[in-house]
Image (cartoon, rainbow, N blue to C red; front, top):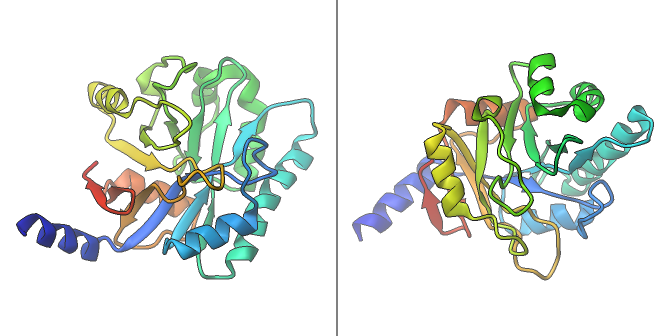
Length: 238
């Protein structure tokens, strides 16, 4: 009974629910979720905000056209939400040096254009060359098959709880990794890609204020005043 009361107190104190990791099609070719489906799904689940973290990779394409098409999914999701869900711009970037993925918060269109030019040169070079104090870079699912260990000093944090059911993200080992590397910024994400797999809304960041922009998300994570939630029932103190 005491634990139930404490849980309710925490939910009252941190009432705003934000998804930190989700993908729409066509910006993410691996996703089967349209902007309209994404908006309606998270509105129905009662979320207050959602960060679109579509895949952002380098290739033989004009960067302005690529970023415009990337932003189009975000804008279409904003329009579909029609004010009932705060849709926020994020990204899941990949450098050409390996298959690691990194979640980026605190960005806008101009920052994406700058990031695109640096993707061929690796994470270490990116951290040396790109300076933006409002941005956060967290390694996504670092213990998943195919991931490469990186210098923890190059990371602002780690996605400890990646809840995509189609991958073994080894969340316990990832939590251990975050602790060993003294990473205070840890997050949970549904990594939502597919309908009919029952993995929409498996994770959330709970906050006292609802984030309105990508920079708000970065600031909330940096401040550390948030909770993590799994399956809309289990609370985690990060």
